[in-house]
Length: 262
Ligand SMILES: NC(=O)c1ccc[n+]([C@@H]2O[C@H](COP(=O)([O-])OP(=O)(O)OC[C@H]3O[C@@H](n4cnc5c(N)ncnc54)[C@H](O)[C@@H]3O)[C@@H](O)[C@H]2O)c1
Image 1: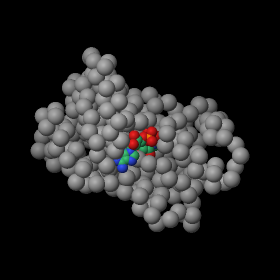
Image 2: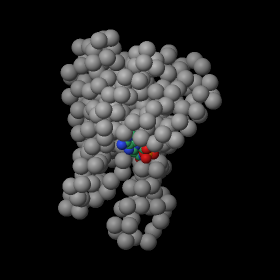
Image 3: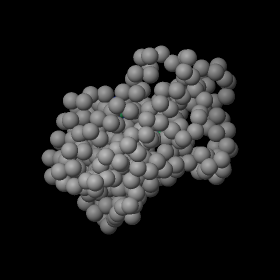
């Protein structure tokens, strides 16, 4: 394989499905060594197997982003596996719907724990390695919810907005160590998480339209008149881990078919 990532070792969380799996595969196609992580041991092994069956370099590891102990073990294992870590794609996240007054504290706490605290903890524990080697690259998976208001997504939006904010904050702290930190803000990409979000919303509204009908209504609201594909986001993550973006840090980049431009 020849690619822009030249044997960089990159941890990808949430690599068992959707955007995490697509990004892990794309990074490997660009010649990265990918340390695939997910709470689901079967799906993350599948991702790693897909990569190695195509001639790429990957390994797999189970970790729950709710556990700091497991995140520390993940970083130690990745470091050992590839004799160093060059990048982190902090991607794992969960769905969660509800307006502010409808959301329970329990649901809020769970979403914030996985989708915000878990991403921060991954960054916290790779950064000492990056400082020591005076280089490193973190890409956070945010969302267009960080940029615009969307109905009935209070906890999800809180997590994604905070990710955008800490992307800028951390870029300010770590630029002097040659550590770059950026975030991708995808629009709607049809993955398990999105189907679950739509299902929860339609059930709460007692709507009789199907998830597919609702998704195609959403697609018609995008200037490019379609939903995104996983590769639209994985291409951006490969760019951000490559030298092609080496003067970019602190950016929150919409990959959204023009949605937030409206
Ligand atoms: N799909 C979209 O339209 C979209 C848009 C914007 C942002 N995002 C973000 O992209 C990221 C990935 O979403 P996706 O759509 O690919 O979802 P997905 O449900 O297909 O994949 C999420 C993965 O994260 C894993 N995961 C969940 N909880 C975990 C935990 N506690 N520890 C470790 N792994 C865990 C799941 O097992 C799964 O493999 C999320 O942060 C999501 O918020 C998605």
